[in-house]
Image (cartoon, rainbow, N blue to C red; front, top):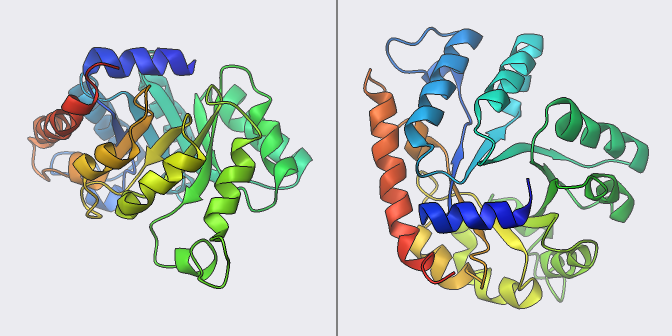
Length: 269
């Protein structure tokens, strides 16, 4: 999928919404079997309910990997359920020496046909470059994360400038906006204006809106660029909006609400 197709989808739906299918087998709602078939049935219902508002779906692979071979099959089958006009992201956070990264890239881009994959950049160019070589695929590099431990390295005051700024500046030189994005946590919304000075053109994947307390409006105010440039991810607050038989309708309503919050910022793109 090309970035200009993503931009067209954002314009058409007036939405930056990325729905996170971080499906926890223990949290499946009433009426859904607590097994991998139940996960697939749940994911299918969520996709059908939210596809009118979502421009992307992000699957955190850990929720599937922990179930072994059946979990991997469920991951692949869920990928097949995502419409071709909607960006599919494997949230795998891979990154290793060059030949290993090449295998990771083939796994997610060729075997499972994801449009994008998240990558950790701290081993340097040779660990990221194999992903960037794939045509019409997108590498999403961790930029500034919202977890508590981000202060250990990314925002540690011992580093001047902060290490995350060095990473953003260096990595942005490795590829254009057409095949390179960055992850920036929604709870770091105040830093988005500075981040936009470093990476003015690249898309930003923003997790943490909803259950983690991030504000979609603040993200748009501080992070939007001329192409929109945002994918605002919400996982738990959408997919677990209800634990009853109305879970799909509740997810649709929550997706609609979040899309409406960002709609004013998608106009005139």
